[in-house]
Length: 165
Image (cartoon, rainbow, N blue to C red; front, side, top):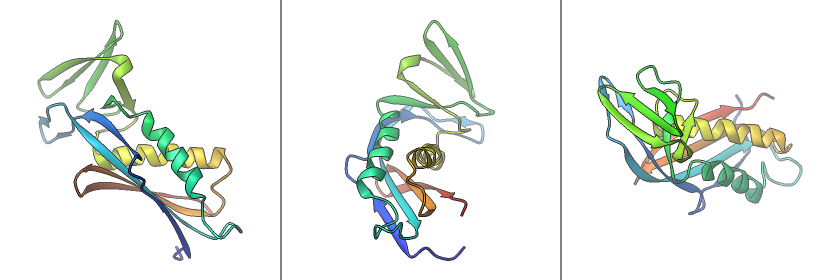
């Protein structure tokens, strides 16, 4: 891929979300815990004729809408081979490696990811953002979309999304 001549990057202070999650690794399920996640979005591409790849305001608006769906929620991995989610009476029961807890369903963000890592949360946001850019006809000049999620100070997970040309 030829490097794109332009880059649009947004990382406003309020582009983020407060959520709880846990990850699994080996035979371990972490305790449920929360973060003030921050989000960064970078679009690489060509001049759309307006002198930019993508309008800052539109990119920020779409990314913020997606982040708001995660805010004040418990992020759960729907496709994990080691996390079992069952619903009953408005509650989600979570089981993994001997740990169990119940969460109000309305307080959950059940994502189509195998683990609730920063990288996979970034992938979720990037997929939704890609769909939104296409839906609003804003993807024309974009070659590559990169989404970063900061879980803790200077600890980022990134996901890259290539746009067909």
